Image (tube, rainbow, N blue to C red; front, top):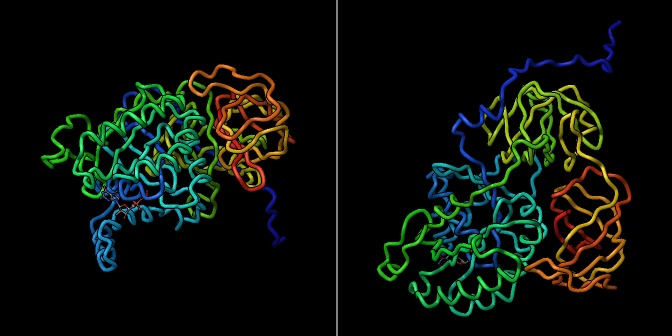
Length: 441
Ligand code: GDP
């Protein structure tokens, strides 16, 4: 003997506690999880504002913050310290997880928030698309200082807002930022509110789902605490945090069949040789469950679960989880794959109809379909109609070509079958750039 037969691995078994997960969830008082994406023009103050949120909510330790402050002051840019906060908190990197979307987490009394995207990046759109596909709502940051607001509106502000709406995001919180720079000019705020509001409704957001907060990321005014500046006394509305907390209802489908898109696969831990991470899009799950991964059709067993980095016996839709699993060969697991139950697998399809926002001219053409990190070669086979952005009604049937900035319904045929079902946010890319993004119907 001597040579051990490695092909026969021992099966791991973990006894299920057979919990009624929904009942557990209801009595747990667990904080609700909410993801949001931050959008807005370069230099609107997105990084500073998010750094402020993380710092004010205690998501960053004082020593690190002091270190950033010192470094920032050394180069004469005190406020940059807050922006640098965003580069911290990626301990996932140290665990060997590859992330191209920086995630940052902070908590309020009721909610565990995750900021999904990389607001510091200049080349923002590809990251934002990945972020937007996981967002419950969006925070749009506007630079209120004179001249900047107008140029921002012409720039990325519109593009980003249209994109998140096209991908199915319903709620948007507008942080009218840098109000300190305009001495809290009430008229300025109202002018911005009016213009942005009219633009956002044209983009398809409902008025009741749009909120405005005048604030200053640098000073922390109206972020976690009310501004004490006498010039800001005209504002008696909510702080940004209060507005974020009110971003109910999150329509997470707790009672639907289990769906989780794998964002990362990592291996090599001593206790947990194989783990997958992602967000539970629908359903629930507990330790000891059998799962099915698609498209491989292979099953695995859930050894243990982490929810927002804490061990848990169970997880429900809306939560960001790590599943430590066994009884599967990792070659069957890829980011973009979908975890479900053997009893209700996600269908695999080759053709779908989708409503998209066009970034470039669309015609019958080759594209890549991206869903999260899954991507598949495909072609646009039919332009069904161009649509009105606000109402979704058909403006022109069977157009020969769809112009950039237009919303259209199209049919896409993929080169092979993939696990996809409505409603799913998808992106179409071609030649290295995003040509359209939208929602599978
Ligand atoms: P981003 O590109 O949107 O992430 O913007 P940054 O957070 O990097 O900020 C861009 C610039 O605006 C920096 O010089 C900041 O110091 C400045 N800034 C950010 N927030 C505020 C604010 O609330 N008030 C003022 N006056 N300046 C700000």
